[in-house]
Image (cartoon, rainbow, N blue to C red; front, side):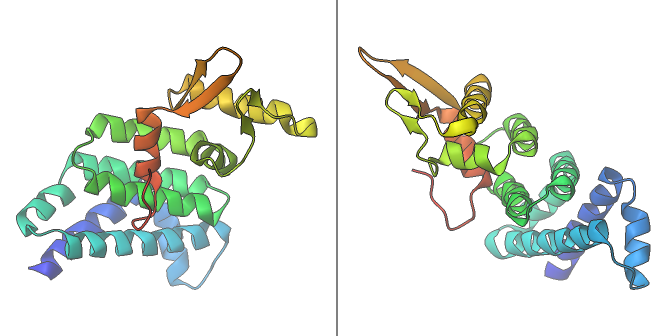
Length: 202
């Protein structure tokens, strides 16, 4: 039974990947011949991510019937397509890993609507790593009075903050003498969506 489920998951994922990337079919053939370029290398690495995700879903899902239904669902096909396209465009392994996390978490977050999860993928695609770190609070560039200037990067950080506020992931609270920037519930869900499985978003 497990082997059948694995085959369904991997075959559906590969079809979605091939549909998402016009050159994927050619790349599969080239890889078989031992020819490798950067695009093919990324695709090969991404296929490993997909295999790991499918195996993880099999290990962590109690009902094989529910899992088979997921692999045959429109959401599974679309999510793999969108994540594949985004991951192969990403210029860092960190960003590609976030797409893999998003793909897995999207299947695991049953209390979040499919529409919202599909909404999150383009956000991850357009954000830089700095956007993500900014949202996570890794960069100490937001003071109680707003953005702290850091030379020529101050406009860059201001633009990032405006992007995140515009997308509804951050919001500003005006106090008597200061402006505080806080993460919205949508922002917290987005961080949950891209987190590694062992991470917890407070």
